[in-house]
Image 1 (spheres, rainbow, N blue to C red):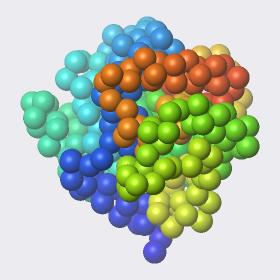
Image 2: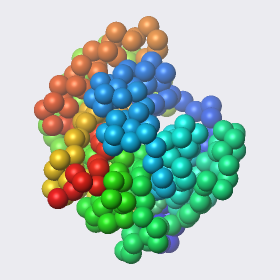
Image 3: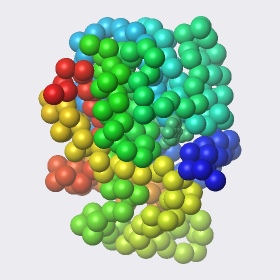
Image 4: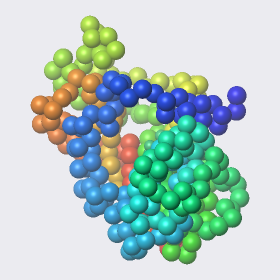
Length: 301
Ligand SMILES: C[S@@+](CC[C@H](N)C(=O)[O-])C[C@H]1O[C@@H](n2cnc3c(N)ncnc32)[C@H](O)[C@@H]1O
């Protein structure tokens, strides 16, 4: 099966999952999600994507936007609703995701003529119309050559256009190094045993030491997953050195708390606040899972 077809199948299945799943990730836990959102606000100086784009571009409204790997595209559709974008190209290899995006747009009473639906954009040639905003939300890290993708964005922006990224920058295929794994282990070891109970079999404990699945595991599930994520930050710093990158941490809230977040509830907010403090120190020391930035066309060399 071709790589993108395999990835599309995976994302079709992800979109069709039932809603009553276990809480296993930071965004599924309301308590942790609130703290991660606070972290995003502190790091970016903005309350949401639209405010961040307006502040960093100095523009109230932008023309044509394109979101690549848009998924259900709720944030981008709200940019249309709030007048931050005029028109939007929604691009995703998964039809199931695009179907859901279109339903959300309808629910928000967005005129369908403002949306163009695309399954694939060919990054080896220019798009036929310049783009005022290129939007990446947890999707740039799915590109096979992230530097070439950022160069494509530069070539396809209007003179005062911008790229928005709220994305992941882990090592390729999430092959975390021993230093990160040591800190994660230290944190998990510091937790009372009850917090390490496995959500999949509550009679067992999860290990404090993480053993990240190998590259072949990711290639078998979704070959685009973090295929070239390590290249993103060096490419931005090299191609657009004036761009401000907000590092968002994540080695504790996304990696150390993966699965075991199931064992925390509202009363554990103080413990999770401490987890966020350690996460912040790791981010300051250069250990980051996530970042955000707005790159203006004239931030590029
Ligand atoms: C992690 S999801 C993010 C979805 C959405 N942006 C969000 O933030 O919820 C990654 C998305 O990228 C899509 N994708 C992966 N490779 C792609 C490609 N080459 N072109 C377009 N979409 C792609 C997947 O189908 C999936 O919907």
